[in-house]
Image (cartoon, rainbow, N blue to C red; front, side, top):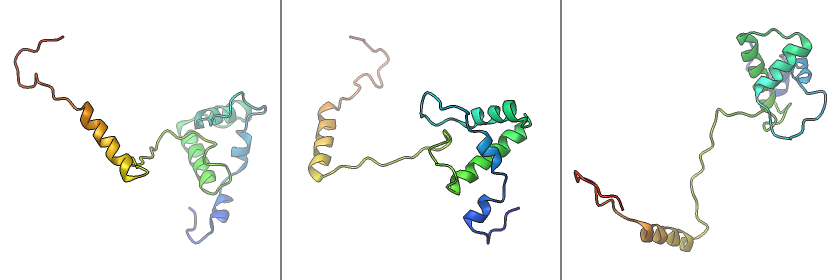
Length: 122
């Protein structure tokens, strides 16, 4: 159990760092795209005898998350499909805002077949 009074740097050293270093590929990959946790896990299992269990996979995921939060590894280094950032649509000016809604008003149409038993397709 980690002591909440410890600093982020202290907490980063409270868990085994070599596991993260061991998961690095020996050669550069073709793409610079971030990888998910699974390739790191299977690298540890195959090359370093890491235990192949669901609990070990979850432990590695937690270690990687802690390393990201402690800035030991970049947040962009591990692909995380779990979260979504929702940003509101913004306009640079009142003029742009009005143009957007005027365009939407020009394209607006009603479905005239709503409530009718038979719909004729063009």
